[in-house]
Length: 180
Image (cartoon, rainbow, N blue to C red; front, side, top):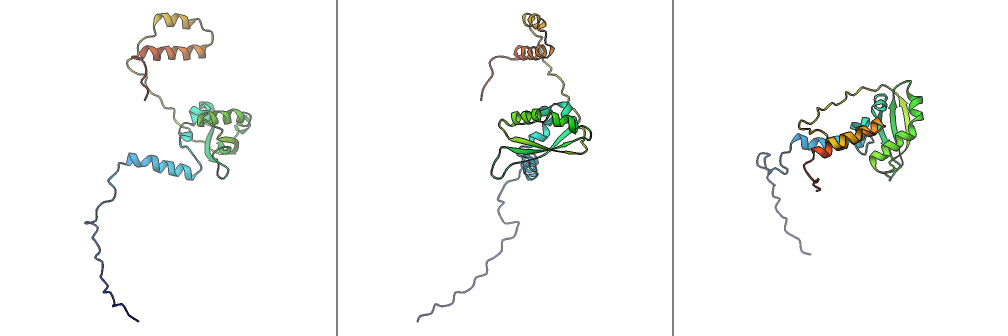
């Protein structure tokens, strides 16, 4: 039998940290924050973190002041038909219980599909969130007179306000919208 000659062991020289090439470039913290927040929200059961940040838009300011979402739990392997865990202030649970079908519909409309099928409530303290107030845009043009007179004849005040804001937006636009 033939034997192989022993191979000499060569010690690999460790490269000091200062000489190693940098694998990734530096990144701004603002670029990292959405990923960090998304990972934290997913860990605690939220598919989209925007349900927490936009809760008052989804359910309305009254229900947002007395309730807060905790998590959404989905059945294994699915992203629909989940259970929304909701914290409700003490004493308001019976009122929220009557409004659950409406809340489920609003949350599903926000997601765009039937993400929530059930709501599980628990009583707890809700921290009040300050309302975000934005000043109106500076260069508002007045509503055209021909539109303003026709809007005054509408009896429903909510519809009139929505149509006035639509007319205001059309009056402020500079042309056709750009898509893409």
